[in-house]
Image (cartoon, one colour):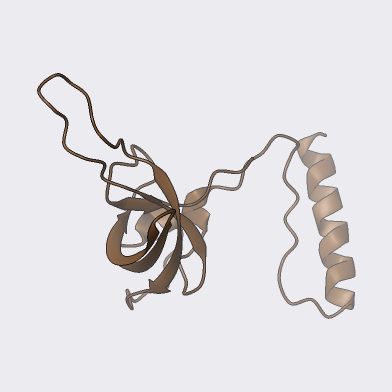
Amino acid sequence: MTPNAIRELQDSLNKVAGQAGYQGKVLVLPEGSKVSPSSQTPSIGRIVHYVSYGTPVLPDGSQAFTTKCRAAVITEVPDIGGPYVNGEDVPNELVGLCVLNPQGMFFNEAEHSEDDKPGGTWHWPERV
């Protein structure tokens, strides 16, 4: 689909959506496009991935438990002001999480990281 065809389709959909009373905007993405994680805003109740720390690396280079992604629910979001123009402008504040492990739940605060995803951080689930 060409960029002009996408714009025309998007305009048509927004016109129909507006007539139906929808207040938002319809966004048409080219095939294969992905939604940018930075365009999402953390809010209470959203499902995210928490990266566990894992156990310390032993002298032989092994670990009893490696870092793993775990399901988590956002339980607290600080008031960070705004409005912000895009996701890159939003301060990287800690959010409260309820992390769901096979052995049980635990509550923690964690910082957002979409890039290297080190232990102790959270990120948006990957699209599959």
